[in-house]
Length: 126
Image (cartoon, rainbow, N blue to C red; front, top):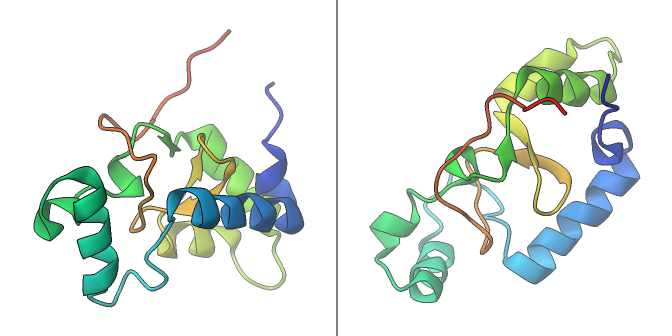
């Protein structure tokens, strides 16, 4: 069996890698539930499109966003069960794993490394 990525099992590693995604690739917005017009205008300018189109380019449909059953299990296992069902966190955040920056990622966010064609729902074996 393929081991879980370190960032799915270690909060400090995940935070370091997420910080890099924020710094290098503008991972965000900070609160995807808010309109965030400045964030989306910035992404639109970067990608040469409109803010409305930029809003459709999310981690949840990125080719580097891994939501395979194995990866979701890794994320849930790493969350522990401190009195909570770890799957509640995975489901609530629509979490997956960013294969570009190696961290647990929320489907509603995006970054400059967004690639059409995702998410990854199955993993090829060997």
